[in-house]
Image 1 (tube, rainbow, N blue to C red):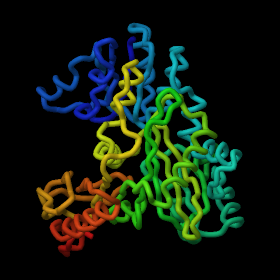
Image 2 (cartoon, one colour; image 1 turned 45 degrees about the horizontal axis):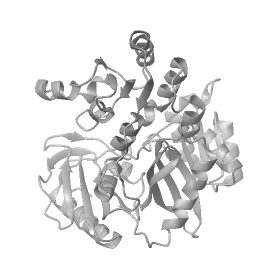
Image 3 (cartoon, rainbow, N blue to C red; image 1 turned 90 degrees about the horizontal axis):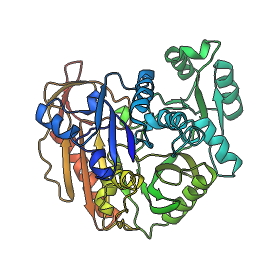
Length: 419
């Protein structure tokens, strides 16, 4: 079998050719930025592929699909594989053009377009926040009049909390208009409005192989949110204990959502659920790909297998490994975001007990800007333990350590700890 791989992820981590195995042939169409600039590493990363095409400006570039069509005419693909949120729809379009199996456009749209998703879920009585499409200012004002402030406005096909706005008053509406001039065009904006729900965010991650759910495990972000990191606050997440009272309700709500949606027979997934302050579980959204921001690493620590590898190997017809249904240990993550200023000092190693990996993503002298996405960071840690309590203690201690050890000189010239 010959597969076209659409890729924008680091090839140092995603070894598609190795995962598909010797019985298959992999042709790679990849973002040039996903390949190491080091000649020796680059050669190793590209070894094993029948053919490789590097593309600059990969993101939303229609020439990627044009190049893929030309490659199909030469190579004749039996399948198209993509693992990034932003390649799911383009991969689905190519499958339909090529006449090959896999997630189709209708399924990819239901998972990528938040309006389409909410309509399907609402029709299936899956609890979601009140929502409405927003093409222009009148749409937004009508929604605010009906539901009041605060209101969340987000792109219908966004990701990583990019361009998500929480509106509290008329001034926030004016600020939104300043950055979304498409709200004043005849074509209109592709936005979604939702009633804001004060919440703790749970996410449920897993993998389905030929209709059988092999992994489905909830995590909590506790008192942190995806929007916090854009405000310069640390984000953390931890797998739930199996006896947590939220464990089974979160899984059941995720099952209902996946059953309502046109979920592929073989898929990874990342679902988000709001635990409202009144105790209700309200479904936010679900993606047919793995969660970002080191969630893949947390699951690997917990379950002993890198689920994207399991997914790609299975698509290639290989027998999947025996991934346990429950984690062998509880794991968690913390992301430390940038804050405007010049980075003066950042630690090289983490001494906190329970932390199994620390990474720094910036060097002293770097000029930092606020995070635009919920996965942007200058440092991160991964922790393991016997329970959620142990892991969250390690993550909290690591945050305190990082704030004390990292120094950012603010634009005004003041030097302060990273907080």
